[in-house]
Image (spheres, rainbow, N blue to C red):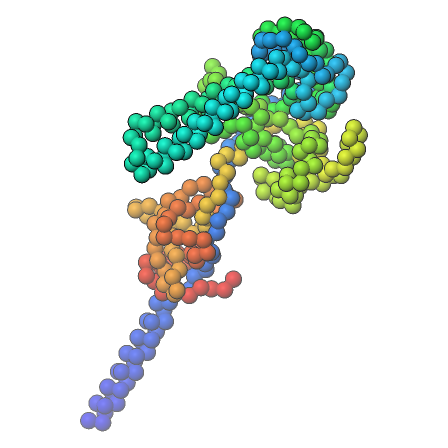
Length: 378
């Protein structure tokens, strides 16, 4: 009897040890990181051709009588300076009337929208108000273009060349107005883009040229070439003191190293204005680009912010992409939609995940939904 009791005790001890061992081995050590909101963007690489833009001729886009000529041959002008005025009263009246109509239609639409939400107006009346607002926006854009075609300003800082128009002259569309030469040897880069980027690339799309010169697209032609491409023009930065003395711009770029930013390195004094400013590194580099040379261009497309995790967190099975979120000491398998990849991070979309949540980065193959986990210290 005594021997049986001893055997039973030994059996119980063994079973207890096995159970404890099993419990211990069911806790898996993993590495984790926090979900963060990060800046994301897509990248498109293309080769562009550099061209000098030192001199341009400008022609009339509107008819009328010249009322004012502020510029003369050889005059140094700044970007935005008024050079020539055609029928100022007509230009200002056209613009102000279009602006007033736009404000009226905007207020009417806002009112109809609120009433429609409360079902106080019909769908037809709401849609009519929206259509009238869109028409007013279109008419205002036309009026603004007309205004800019009649109140003509310097497109960039430079020196006026030949200017033929005189006060009292009747101007017709296509008449030669003036030429302007950039004070510095300004340059542009032309790129040919696939039709698929037509709705994604526009004016102010950021670019990185030759891996070091930051700029933006200045113009896009959405007409398809015979090769099925669209053309975009990039203005190269060149000691633009209006840009460089902008404190907001300085703070935005200073000290950053991502492809979207460049640091200010040199300190210069503008000979014309006496202003001291920081010259961005990209402006120095742009001087070395030769006319008609080919350069690598990186387009920064669709910049936005959203939840991100390291790409190593993402797993996939026949149901889709998923990650393991850590809730206390337990892993939860959550399916996510993925978006843009940027610098090792990947955008995730899920209603079950928020900024600051812990997700597994290493050890995913050893766990499943509901596994007990222990986070390893880095």
